[in-house]
Image (cartoon, rainbow, N blue to C red; front, side, top):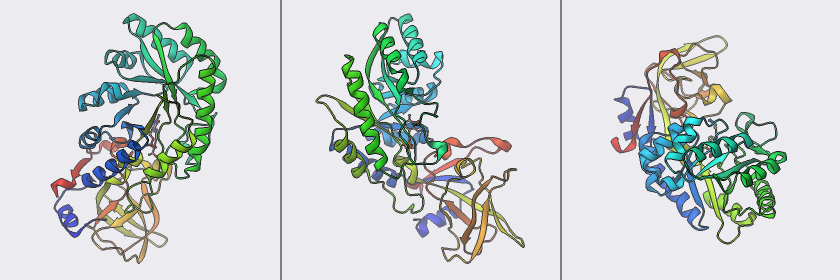
Amino acid sequence: MFSNKDISHFANLETPFYYYDLNLLQDTLNTCAAAAKLYNFHVHYAMKANFNAKVLQSIKAVGFGADCVSGGEVSKAIETGFDKGQIVFAGVGKSDKEINLALDQNIFCFNVESVQELEVINELAAKKGKKASVAIRINPNVDAHTHHNITTGLDENKFGVNSWDLPQCAEMLRASANLEFVGIHFHIGSQITNLDVYKNLCVRVNEFAIWFEERGFAVKVLNVGGGLGIDYHNPDQQIPDFANYFKIFSDFLDIKPGQEVHFELGRALVGQSASLISRVLYVKNGKKKNFVILDAGMTELMRPALYQAYHKIENLTRGNEATLKYDIVGPICESTDCFGKEVEQPESFRGDLYAIRSAGAYGEVMASKYNLRDEIRSVYSEEA
Ligand code: LLP
């Protein structure tokens, strides 16, 4: 919810911009850290959700590690000051250059997604006379019951090693002098709101841990990935239920003494902490439809165009007494450049300020230059 002070501050600023509520971010991080601490769980922040420098600083300060998916993210995590021993590197397509970079930096571990990748990491580590720590990312074939574009743990998805390839993986691990197996890794999808899904994941994690142990491997780390969703319909109900989320893993995982449980949360940590603030450029009233044309578009927030994702849209200038239905669109030359169709809003006018809420995760970081747009700016609550 924005205060009148926020809104009058926005009125003096050039739009569009991402507005970060750093206090809310801090509260969210503290709540998550306290809930994880109860079970001694380790949280790695999934940097892909948002690598804004101020956001990263706050996350580092709370003591979380970093979950990276590119050499760029590994470098950025190190630059930000994340402990190298708390950096993990996932991704189905790590290049030799990226693997070498991570080897040189002695990160905690590679989350390996194919048998061939194991072979390549072993070769590259051998050339450097190093031992690479690896966890095997397993595709557990668990349905995350989320949007199909952000599901990752089903047989048809490209991610992870399929269960039928595990014997070959185990062989490779045994035969590779420059690999050190540290554990198993999973990530079944994003924006998961049905927490029962995680109970199913735990059952599979337990099965795979036993599978490795029976073959003589010590499973030191159980990394269960991320995916905890946020409530896009109620952005003011801002802090996700971390306590219940972690409790499920404590209740349903068979955690052996000395075994560590790792998490890779992205969206749940940052999603509610930012809104995209934009101004109405034009209002077009048609016979069939009314359009509010904003100065922000899919180039600044791609989720609605890409996944038909819902974000709550608010007219900050006129309050919330909705009287008309508008399609809220951007200026980009694409028909999918639409933040919401038939959205009830107060009658809107050129110059009105609009907020597109819950845009802290996969917002700023997925912005593009399409149409040669200006780079999106960020404004922070502490400046208000
Ligand atoms: N770990 C791995 C291996 C991942 O691939 C991801 C996200 C995460 C952790 C963090 O997931 P989270 O806790 O944020 O759900 N752009 C899409 C989401 C893509 C998620 C990709 N992987 C969106 O805007 O909804």
